[in-house]
Length: 172
Image 1 (cartoon, rainbow, N blue to C red):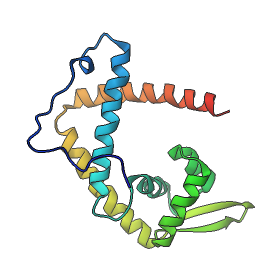
Image 2 (image 1 turned 90 degrees about the horizontal axis):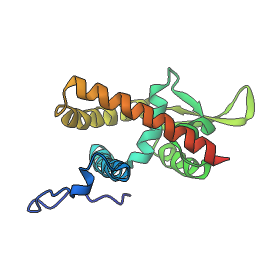
Image 3 (image 1 turned 90 degrees about the vertical axis):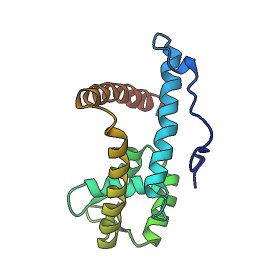
Image 4 (image 1 turned 30 degrees about the vertical axis):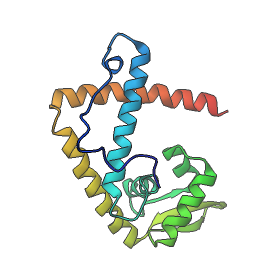
């Protein structure tokens, strides 16, 4: 399900290479971001490990849950939101549909489109998974004050804009 280890050995001291701490090296920024990605992967997998779902599939359910009722989106929009190709989304939708968390239907305004909606069971499951993920995030965020969180959020939002623009430019 994942390439991330479940945990680090308890007896191994955490040693961060000095190059990751060098703030004046632009290449170090990407190295630090990669380390953030690894940490996020570990935390995300931890948040859903007892729920019999991969985090990548959970993201689809969470995306639908954030939509107003009936918590529904076209398949193509889900794929765009979660940055996954249509084939990968179709396979993931098969898994969450088989679990009873979503249902697919033809769009009444355009029968060529498929809409995906959370089921009642899917809403309940997603709320449980969101709560678990929220607890995991709170555990990390309690180590930061509100000014630090605001600064990180502003910087990450700017970086995300650049990454989204690069992604759009290179998908053509």
